[in-house]
Image: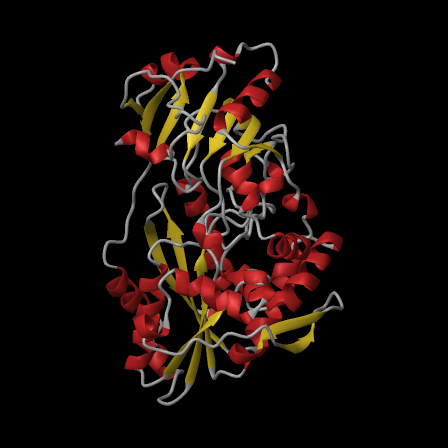
Length: 424
């Protein structure tokens, strides 16, 4: 095929609240909780660190550590990420160290284990699991990003409440909670388990992070345990408001350079690509509506975990070769989403992938296809778009055209570069 669409680059404008001094803001927020009246010198404090690539997360964790040191406490970090890292302590420790959360940087121990303590039974009749190191601590601080969940919808989605559930429940807890969610609902189970954890597991505070559309820290909020649910509802409203989005509501093809667990729970944020409710098509009232997705690779930080790749129709063979099948299946089966581990149709080169995917978009000629091309779903401030969008882009005040129209830059082997390199 020779009739590929030409492309141009657009820059989007998102609202951009930003925390510029992470350490100072964390200290200020935690000071507002007056924890010195609860935390006594010499007491131990477990601080959670999850598997997401949250902006400046190493700085946030270190600042939490520093605050509790000023109280004379003995803080330590606990990897809290369900079944990620292959469901092993070593794998989970490696993930957080990859984000810069090391013992040297944070100035405290990291205690990684997949062992849990069964705290009690939830009202629905299943065991409530809690990380053994966190359970053995005098206090627990739950730290995490508040954002829309990739598979569940409600006034509580992904955040501190989920961290107490899936993160601190480790693999054993994540398995049973996801099973329970299928029989009840995410909202009911997350509240049920959180109620028990807050009552029995010595949670002293939460540190919630909300990001803006540029993958930057927009807000940090320290939360008292009795306010977790109310504050998280408020923060989720902000997170949805600041969530990045693609510049156009429909596409024939979306090319994504990389997916990974550091980007999203499903590798690519389903809220951004329009696949939160159904694997291969947007729901009736869901946007955007993307006909086909092409995955070009995995992030280094995901360590072979390709959870969510099954939501795409096409991929480069290099992305498939990078998959750790065991890790990916463990994560998808634990989450009750087996199709997330399925393998898309794949080919060795970008040219071949486009040659087979462009004829599947309907009666639209390939040269006229609506194609968007992004780095990952956290990085959509600049997007390569096909000529079919040009007139709309010119007419919109929230978009700036920042390149001339040009052909897709295939090399001699039919490969495209990383999309970021085209903006330089």
